[in-house]
Length: 244
Ligand SMILES: [Fe+2]
Image (cartoon, rainbow, N blue to C red; front, side, top):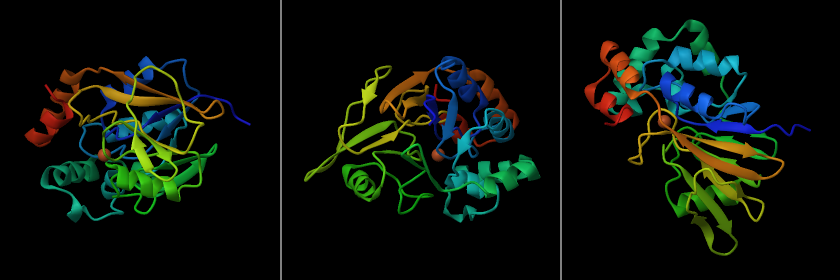
């Protein structure tokens, strides 16, 4: 049985600088990488992010942006800016990368942990943003820990029997033991933070010890900003990817 620690990341969104910063920041503290979807979409480097993750032999599931960028999902459900970035990605992703994205699974169970981008009912589009949706997933899942992405907001819920899911306060860089009940964790986004703090987020997970640790690190936003300007990405997206 594997006892290796895992780096869990989600919503990288083509942001190579943020992904590299996370890898540098966590060097030596993981032996596997798990990716909760949205490698593509929004940012300037979907090919390079995918290549880097594949070099690490990362375990990946697909998100809505991945499946749209490879042509498996219609772009009609995306807003104007997201659609524009997906169209750019459709033109710059290699055929090999597209076929890799097309074949990504939507839900995986590994080492007694469930991985999904959204909800279990709707792994592509389901947002877990409140206690009601967290309760639904925590009562449907078969594993003590479920990992989800998609919202770009770090979160940790615990299932209290009879009450439902309760949102817990996240303490960064502090190990949390999830053995007491079923838990749901979202590491937040590597490449496009949406909680007002412009850092890349991740989790270090030790499945056999049943511990998770939320982490956060800064990255070189100016490099990403220049790439997005050059790549013709919408201004509003640049401001969202690279908050000032
Ligand atoms: Fe996303």
